[in-house]
Amino acid sequence: MANINFGGVMEEVITSEEFTLQQAREVLANETVAVLGYGVQGPGQALNMRDNGIRVIVGQREGGQSWDKAVSDGFVPGETLFPIEEAARRGTIIQYLLSDAGQVARWPVVKKCLNEGNALYFSHGFSIAYKDQTDIVPPDNVDVILVAPKGSGRTVRTNFLDGSGINSSFAIHQDFTGRARERTLAVGIAVGSGYLFPTTFEKEVHSDLTGERGVLIGCLAGVMEAQYNLLRKHGHSPSEAFNETVEELTQSLIRLVGENGMDWMMANCSTTAQRGALDWAPRFRDAVTPLFNELYENVISGVETKRVLEKNSAPDYRQQLQKELDVIKNSEMWQTGATVRSLRPENRKAL
Ligand SMILES: NC(=O)c1ccc[n+]([C@@H]2O[C@H](COP(=O)([O-])OP(=O)(O)OC[C@H]3O[C@@H](n4cnc5c(N)ncnc54)[C@H](OP(=O)(O)O)[C@@H]3O)[C@@H](O)[C@H]2O)c1
Image 1 (cartoon, rainbow, N blue to C red):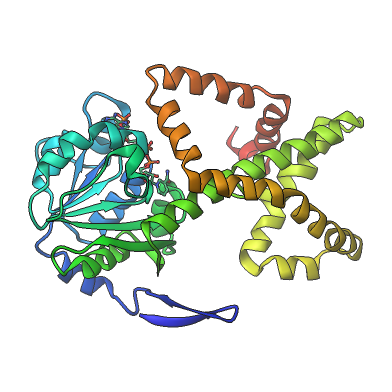
Image 2 (cartoon, rainbow, N blue to C red; image 1 turned 90 degrees about the vertical axis):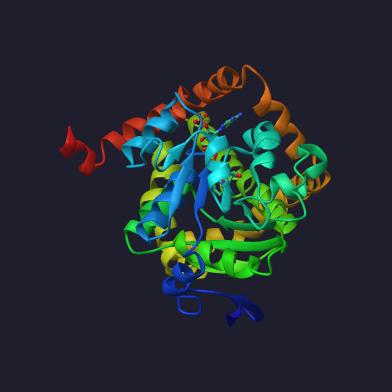
């Protein structure tokens, strides 16, 4: 464990220097990690652990694309790939990586499969922190732990393959065995975390729900659309509006922000851009603050999780979702995006 200064605030973090992969292998030497769910996080974490020499099995309902994907990724039915219930029975660390609504639906079955001393592992605080809505209350005789990668399961895998990592938070809700912390850190390192930082199940879910509804996806999508619509309304072409709103961001500026920070970006853009950005940033900040306050209140009060469980458990969930997604996909803005992407030199070469 290292104490690191984050802008003046000291925080505990763990990297593979403080807790090595070799240590992780030793802690997990007698464990079988059962990854339940082969959606987005499941494959990333399962494949990274397998490549790191950990005994991994996958539990996935049969007959769908996810089962086929597990097979094509080298998991062998009857040996390392099982129906959910059987994998849950065989594992000693049970990684519950079904969708959050799926976790609620399958809990009665998974709960029955837990043996004394098992660890029940989550990558989101949702199921435990909102137990009043999910009814997921683990038995007292298991560890309940969390490692939550702060990125898509896809980048959990691709960053690992590139020799990089995704930072993850970790938490221990219940330590029955006395080994909960070492198990958590071992899995956190084995799934390829860049660094691990401590949280609680509650803090993880509150920040995560805020982040994805806010800057990471929801707010970003909303402000992009607002700017695109504004430019279109004033006679700018789709190409101009899209390049000025999305393409320049994703292909240039946000990469520089990722590498160097927004402070550097502000200091290294044209003086004209700089003056405007310095003037307008506080105005945008103040304009969205009331909306962010409302968002955080809805997260804390359980309004957001209630909506997720209701919507995602509906029998026609996939059809309704598809309708909403199609509206975005078929909009002029994102159709323009598809065309702009197809014109990137690397994509033109592929044609
Ligand atoms: N997406 C991310 O990158 C990400 C990032 C950080 C944390 N997390 C957390 O990781 C966990 C897994 O998320 P995810 O995004 O990987 O989920 P997902 O892609 O939605 O995964 C769905 C998985 O759950 C299965 N499933 C869904 N409903 C089911 C049901 N009723 N019965 C049985 N299986 C069911 C799916 O099987 P089928 O394919 O057969 O439907 C699939 O294997 C969640 O707690 C999430 O909050 C996700």
